[in-house]
Amino acid sequence: MSGSGEKPVLIVDGKRLDGRLPGDIRPSRIEANVLKNAAGSAYIEWGNNKIMAAVYGPSEALPKHTSNPERAVIKCRYQMAPFSSLEEHGRSGPNRRSIEISKVIKEVFENAIITENFPGSEINIYVEVLQGDGGTRAAGVTAAAVAVAASGIPMTDLPYGVSIGKIGDQIVIDLNKIEDNYSDADVPIVISPRTGRILLLQMDGDMTKDEINRGIRMAADAGKMISKMQSDALKKQYMEISEKYKNEAPSYTPQAQK
Image (cartoon, helix red, strand yellow):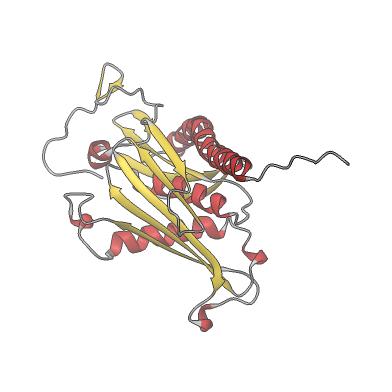
């Protein structure tokens, strides 16, 4: 959150340094099924974040002692590529931060995927950050949800993530890296839009109960746009598949009876 030295001014005349208002998210786009060999995949650009998500399975749980005879086991790996960031967590290999984020993403999908449909199996979710600029866990969950949906694995809902935070006395959403570093609070949140259920909420900094509630309402408003972006990516994928099979299907012309 807070960096060393003097804090930069992050809001000027009601606008943030990148021109956004407090309730605005960064320009974003999602593309579904970008990897040929994954059961489902997605690529997201969220501001300067560039993230790939891939899903494999359901398959036999290995090693066998990790299996659950009543439901699928969810395994998740979040990782930042060595070239994604100049900071220490951008170095190659797992670290405490990547292990922690892998754990919370795993818990999100344990509460979203209908795991009892696949007893004794495992589902692997990979989130690879190619370029990071704040809010990567929220963007990663958003992309991973599209990847799971594209794989055909049933879920109770299509969760999305976004961060809320506090800069001075102003509540904002979708903090970029400089805002994350110098804000008074940063709160990644994941919401199930159909029920409004919160699947993830972590806090770094200090916010009052009223401030958190205001931030959650702002996140829910932004979530309408994020959910539409997810749905549009899936619709585009299925329309392209449908069109492909339509064009490849052999035509049949009935012959006239003799």
